[in-house]
Length: 229
Ligand code: NDP
Image 1 (tube, helix red, strand yellow):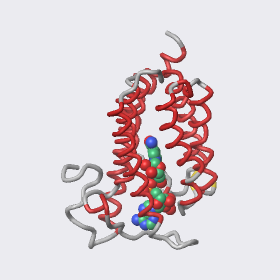
Image 2 (spheres, rainbow, N blue to C red; image 1 turned 60 degrees about the vertical axis):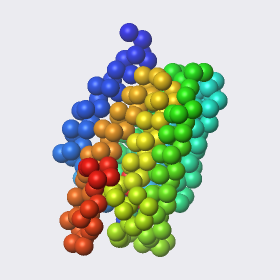
Image 3 (cartoon, protein in one colour; image 1 turned 180 degrees about the vertical axis):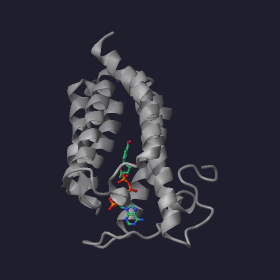
Image 4 (cartoon, rainbow, N blue to C red; image 1 turned 90 degrees about the vertical axis):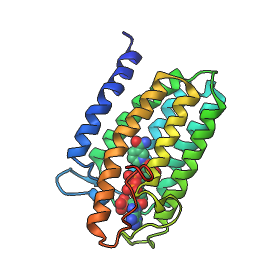
């Protein structure tokens, strides 16, 4: 087996392990941050350090050879690494979380940059863009809930928040399913599977946290999938 194949199989194998682990150990950042996870770093620096490797490694690995997928990858990671950190008003996060996220992003950016080719489907690009818009809108609603310097939480309303607690995660998941369809690669599919493994348990944890924190939390709202879950 080549190194790339070992990395790819590792992402598939790790996905259910990570999902199971995250059900029991909620990742300690944001509303779930707690003591015992080592030194912290401001959210802005954390997000840049965590997400920039994806952008750089994808291009270094040759992802630029497929213009449409490369443009969408750069749209997502250019935003996530260089724009989102300056818009969001999140609390500091453990360096351990940043290190884990950056490690995954290095491997994932490499695998996707190597795998992506000339064959792509417009339908996948459309799904990706719908996911990106959903994620962007949902994150923008959250940003509007705090004034500069505030760190408290309120109930988000509007858009897909009518139906789910975490439409930003739903959008993210739709994006990477679109990516898998767009690229038609195992690396793309592995990323979509890992995103679900990572975000589904966190959506449930956030949903339960909202229900426990706000007695008037809308009863019909689900965690991640409208009307279902
Ligand atoms: P959250 O929804 O937990 O938080 C997003 C931002 O909004 C944070 O700055 C948070 O502050 C703030 N916030 C959240 N809820 C409220 C509220 N009720 N009232 C006021 N402020 C609020 O998202 P994450 O931080 O987990 O993720 C951020 C982005 O990164 C999302 O778009 C997500 O999809 C993406 N992501 C993608 C992953 C992947 O696997 N591809 C993995 C993880 C994230 P604070 O930090 O203080 O809680």
